[in-house]
Image 1 (spheres, rainbow, N blue to C red):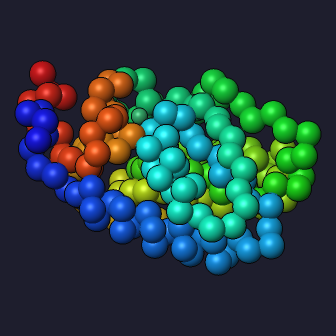
Image 2 (image 1 turned 120 degrees about the vertical axis):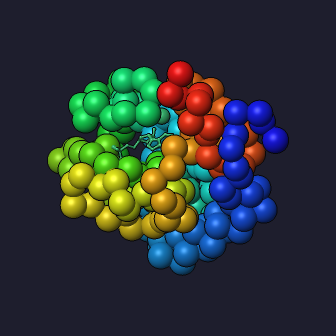
Length: 180
Ligand code: IMP
Ligand code: MG
């Protein structure tokens, strides 16, 4: 285990099972629709890569990049679009936004409104992790892999100051790392 990790919260095997369950549900719900997985860079890449392989219906992918965090563990609350989605056929897309984690809820509630305004056929959200106790806006994700308590976690795409994204599990970061 990485020396900066206090504890493995969700193991590789558990993550695999969670993603399989989500992919099965999404494959059922989106049958006959024009499913577009819209990954939010960079945190969603591992989750999205695993999820798309397990979806059994036709699927397209796209990406957006937004920044809601300055650096570290506190949200600034300001959502900045760094890379936008550009598609002429957005009105025909059933967009499923793929995020690593929902925390305050500000990023996803903003993005859902934004994409509906752009004319998407439908917009829903799928997050690997959810910290419901941290919510600051009234928002519920349509698909959630696992609810977790208020720990700062890294791995499986999630970072602290751009590190730890490649860990194959979700781990609780040692406090001494971010309280330095
Ligand atoms: P929200 O707008 O507050 O819901 O912010 C969601 C974003 O905050 C995620 O996409 C992550 O980049 C980041 N985030 C929230 N909690 C954590 C965490 O525990 N570890 C790593 N990143 C986190
Ligand atoms: Mg991040």
